[in-house]
Every structure is written in structure tokens, then in C-alpha cells.
Image 1 (cartoon, rainbow, N blue to C red):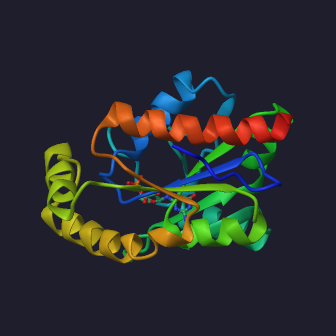
Image 2 (cartoon, rainbow, N blue to C red):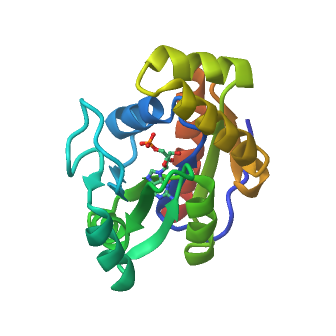
Amino acid sequence: MTIDVPDTVSRVLVLSGPSGSGKSTIVDRLLADSGVSVREAVSATTRSPRPTEVDGKDYYFLSQEEFSQKQQRGEFVECAEVHGVGDWYGTLATEIQLAHDENAWALLEIDVEGALAVMDHYPDALTIFLLAPSMEEYRRRLESRGTESQDAIERRIGTAEGEVQRADRYRYQVVNDDLDRAVREITEILLAWEEKIHA
Ligand code: 5GP
């Protein structure tokens, strides 16, 4: 695979893809063994934690009021209401700064609206859209995860259809047909960009 890398690059990696496209698993793998120093930017959200989620690790779980105070103080690089049910998500500028202070890539796992805003801030960001092999496969993955109601699943599929149509706004599109292969592809892209920084 030839990887087309721009002349200037920012150490900001934006990974989007419908929930159920395997993003979280891929993120875990990249953090553990991509061979490049990567730090995940922990997002803030107003949605309630799922049973296994930890505050400050998976998200900063904030009340609506805390979230809008941060918004008013301009602490977010971007923020968006993601699934149209009043749940807000946002990337804190301090999280990107923390990664850069460590000379690491800031990894942002965010939705398309947020990603487009980040692209305005960081035009040289590495942006990757992760696609599930098909909508049927995507539905199957969401259902087998069992964390959402049928209603929430339908909403997420609706969001996904809209997002996939904007996948071409990203520099790369990666199909998660096979986890190892997708991780390898993303790692190769990341290594090519990292090499550019040192060139
Ligand atoms: P979930 O509720 O499943 O954790 O996440 C729902 C969606 O919110 C995912 O598509 C995820 O990419 C997006 N998301 C998570 N954090 C952020 C963020 O900081 N900003 C934006 N714009 N979207 C986010």
C-alpha cells in the first residue's frame, strides 16, 4: 500500500466511525502496540455512564450545567450533540495539550460533526473513518453488544447512515472487515505520518 502523507502534519489523530464499527477495540490496540506514542484524549459527555465505564478514563461524565459552563469558557476544541437525544460530547483543549506535552499523538475518537470542527482547527490532522463491512453487519454488532435499547439502536443506525455519506471528508477510509488487518492498516498510516515528522 502506498500512503500519501502531506508535507506538514499535526500529531492529532481523529478516528470516527459509527458506534459498533469496532472503534474502541481498535483504539485499545493502537494504544497498546502501534509502536508510536499515542495518548487518548478523554472526551467530556453529559450521557450517563454504562456499567463498566469509569469517570476520567472512558469519559469525563459531566452534568448539563458543568458541560455548558466549560462550553461558555471556551474549553472545548469542539463539542456536539451526538445522537439527537440531548447527550452532548466534547473534546477538551487541555486533553490535546497533555498529549503534545508528552510528544505523543492525541487520539480523538469523535463523531463526524466534531471531526469536521477539528479539521478546521488542525488542518494537518490525520483523519481516519472506520467503516463496518456493511449496514447489516453493523446492526448485528450493535445488537450483540446488548448495551442499547432497540430504539437507541435504530437511532444509532440512522446516525451511521448519515455519517458514512461523509466518510470522504476524511483523509483515509478503513474497512473493519477483519480486526487485525484494520489495525495493521491504521498502524502503517500512523507510522508513515510519524516518519514524516522525523524526516
Ligand atoms: P458513545 O455514547 O457510544 O460512547 O459515543 C457515541 C458517539 O459519540 C460516538 O460516535 C463517538 O465517536 C462520539 N463522541 C465521543 N466523544 C466525542 C467528542 O468528544 N466529541 C464528539 N463530537 N463526539 C464524540
